[in-house]
Length: 188
Image (cartoon, rainbow, N blue to C red):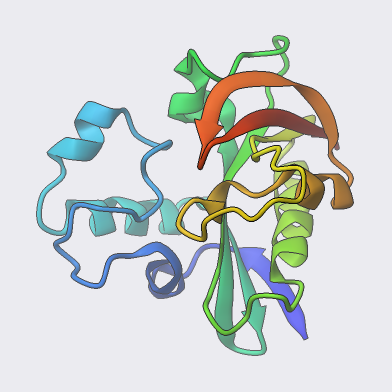
């Protein structure tokens, strides 16, 4: 049975989005959480140390999906104002509401097709609502049912978000894997 919980457990976050080497300068799902210059400046274990501090904070960096005790999924969720999306020139602000964003969905190999993404989106909705968000936004590709390369699928698809109760709210000038990205919103 799948459960989704706030991402307070660093080791489980690292399992889902951490690099194989703890000193690597990639992922940990920081590309939208930190300005590019800060993100690139992190060396050795700085990235992991930063994410560990986020996991230990009152509002962790997202949610994790579990199948029993095994971590099987990750969703990055935070107030848009706390991310680089706040300054994005490609993903417009639709209004002045203090929206939250979900921008990364990862499912562990061997668990795809088991409803993990649906559970993650439901968990992201609950997490944002529980933390006072009036609206949750996502920025998936509008792929019209065509295949999205797995390395770029972390943004999700419009259909995925529609199935979770999100509605199309606007276009962006962002493109992932050749597909346009759209703004999907869910009022909470």
